[in-house]
Length: 136
Ligand SMILES: [Zn+2]
Ligand SMILES: [Zn+2]
Ligand SMILES: [Zn+2]
Image (cartoon, rainbow, N blue to C red; front, side, top):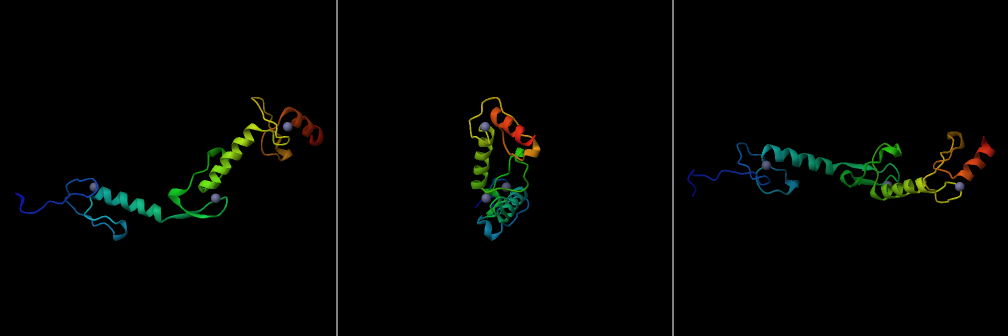
């Protein structure tokens, strides 16, 4: 028996004394009352978990917390699954370090193809010259 005659409730998450008890939702699997802040945090957490989105690359539906934001230089909208993110990231590195045409490893000197050549990546000097000769 406590001095106050009744057990004062504390939030089961942050252990703060409660003036106003919030009852957790059954799917949260939390046993006990919550304070307002923790209640809101849980709400958000479960709301995010309940969201699913399609990967913009492969179309697989995933939970949003398991998905990745594309890097800004990819110029993409939406989210990617881990597999596609990794693949894209690899490709990205690849594009940066190898000549897109002859696959020769590029050093510090890389040539950007002209946009009308429709080449996505960098070129070595020789390939750039030959493209220029061919396509202008
Ligand atoms: Zn709390
Ligand atoms: Zn994907
Ligand atoms: Zn080349």
